[in-house]
Structures are given as C-alpha cells and as structure tokens.
Length: 503
Image (cartoon, rainbow, N blue to C red; front, side, top):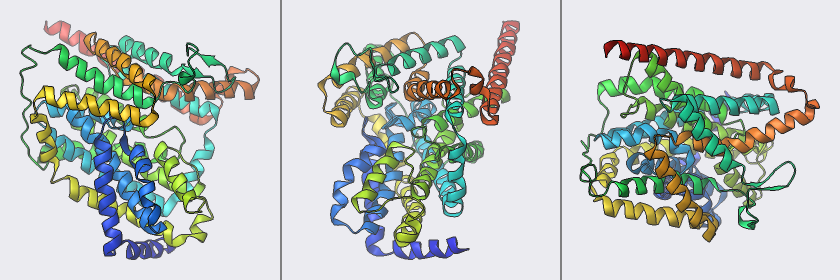
C-alpha cells in the first residue's frame, strides 16, 4: 500500500494552481503541435523542451505529461479529419477514423479516439503505479529470435488483414521493406541503395514516408478528382458530441482489447506504438469478419477505438519502463530521457529513492493530464469536425504547406522535400491501383528491426536456423500467426462461395 500513499502525495503536489496550469498548458500545446502533419507527439516534446529550462523539475515534468498525451491525441485529430496522421502511431486509427469522417461522423470518431486514449492511458498508468518493476521484467524475456517472431507476426498479420487480397497486402509490404533497406547496414556498416548520396546514409526518415504516403498521396488523389462528381461532394458532419448507446456498446470491448494489446508493448523496445496499434486494428477487423460485420472499410467505430486505446496504453507503460529501468522504448521516451538528464537525473531503479517526490508527482500528473485532455477535447470534437467544411482546395493546400514545413523542420534537408514528393506520387499510384498503404508503413518501421534481429540470432547460433523457433514465445507467436491466417483464408473462401451462390 506504499504505492497508494506515495501516489496520494503526488496528487497533492500536482493539484496546486500553478502545477494544474502547467498540465493545462502542456495538454493544449501538445495537441496543437500534434495536429500538424509530420511533427507529432515526439516532436511536440522535443520542441517544448527548451521552454521548460526556466521551470523547476516538478513543474517541467508535469507539463511534459500534458504534452505527451496531448500530442498523441493531436496526432489522431489530423489523421481522422484529413487522413494525415501527425505521427506514425496514429496511422492505424486513421484508417477507419477518416472513413467515419467522410461519412459524416467526424465528431463521433474524435470522441471515440479521446475516450479510447483516456481508457488506455488510465489503465496503463494504474499498472505502472503498482507493477512497474514486474512489467519491466517482461522485456528481459525477449531476445533476437523473439523480436524477429514479433516482427514477422506484425508483417503477415497486417498484410493479410488490411486488404481484401493477401497478395496485394504482401506486395505493399515488399515495397515497405525495399524502402527500409536504404541507408547504412547496421551490422556491416556498408552503404546500401544510397546512390552515393551522404544524405541517405541514415535511410529515409519515417516522417518523410508517413507524410508522403498519407498526406501528399491523399492530396494528389483528391487533386486527380478535380472537376469530377466526387470533387464536388461536401463532407457532412452531424456534429453530435457524444456516442449513441449502440456506438458505445460497440466501442467498449474494442477499448478494452486495445488496452490489453498495448500494455505489454510499452516495455518492449520495438520503437513505439505502431505494432500494437496495427495489431489492435487487425484484431478488431478479424473479429468483425467472424461476426459477419461488414462495416470495416466504411467507417467501423471498433477500428478507431482499439488502436487509440492501444497507442495510449503503450505510451503509459513506456513511461513505466523509462522510470523503472531507464529504458526508452519509443522516440518520445528517448526525448524525455534527455529531459531527465537535463536536470541531472538518471531514470532507473534508484530514481524512486533519489527523486521520489518528482517520480510520484509525474505519475499523478498522468492521471490528471488525461482527465484534463478529455475535458478539453470532448467538447471541441464538433468544432474540430467543422474543419471538413473548409473548401477542399483551401484545406488540401494547407495540408500540403504544413506537411512540407513539418518534413523540413525535422531534418533541414532539401532532399527530404524531393523524397516526400516522390513518395507522395507512389502513394497516389497505390490508391489508384488498390494497394493498401498500411503494410508499406509497417514494413518501413519494422524492417530494420527484423533484419538486425535475424542476423544477430544467426550470429549467436553459428548459423543454426533452429534458434528462430527455439523459445516458447517465438513458437507461440508463429503458431497464432499460422492459425490466424488459415482462419482468415477459410473465412474469405466461404464468403466468396456464398457470394457466387447468391449471384
């Protein structure tokens, strides 16, 4: 029960007028920066890091908590409304969220996102408070073979689920893996597919790929329809703030499932929330297919609820891994690690003894920050939704400007602007020929991890491939994958035969 007493002291520290102001300012600024394409939650924390230099450590980290969760919700706002996620962690939720917006349910999609973020964040924060050391031990169970199995699971599961054709999904995955090969090989140090340009030695930045495929690809796709009947369509919005009883009943299990998927990924260093959000999306889509629910692809509320809860659950437990082990498992956690060092603090087991007041105030601020964020954003969901009433040529011109500014702000390279245009044209071509975009992104994000862990496993085992299936975790992941894909293929074959019989 010491945790409850310490958390109570943390709440007493946070619930003062000045510290509440920092939570409010952090949530507001985080949301504002997260909305901009190409920036996102990690960039929001990085950009606002210098602002906190004049604050005391407790005030600074309380503000960071607001920025962190505000940025995550801001990422989703632009993804749902304009199919332009502020960060790659919001991609999965934007797939169905944008379709909901196009069908006139933007406010409901934003409300689903906000409540899902709240549920995932609260549950993960409770687990961090009581079980941070125990959760952190799970990370030690993953070696090279387990990381590879995790990556392969994500590759095949997402490619098979997000497209009606497994072949098209796998083709899109190959495109993503090919892009991931550009740059310096992490094991040998050799340059690959760089054309001799030093600017490409670090590879193609994920921000460039995300903004190109999703933002500019969408802009070019809309521009190609200029003057057609589709171009003249006005996207309606009912502006309804709250979810109906039926929508709430559909979303609640998805929020809980997404939270359960996201919690363990916060302590596994796979780079962020991309894997759990896509797995949550795939889970909801498979369950919908099994139920005979055909709303996926047309704006299924479960496709927003699951990924949004998973993303915030992962962010919450990632903070637990950072505080308990000093292990940054995401880009945002890495920026916060720099913030700790700025104040002469080193996250890890000793942090709870040396700076207990700061740690428990920070944990309490997670709860307060998410409540503030919910209060801030739920009433404004209909207002955000009115962005869709802006004339398309103004709206998409603005998206293009902010997207290019966001890309240039992250690197300062002119080459990245050229690359984002080229990838935008690739995104347009994929839309035109029915190739899904999500497998490209999952291939780019997890491709380097899969390659590195495969080569490490081979090096450790002396080239024996049996090491890849030598642990219960790896065997379990591959078994679930095989059973899941087999079930999906059987389900699709039955659906196809039923449709042929009806025809």
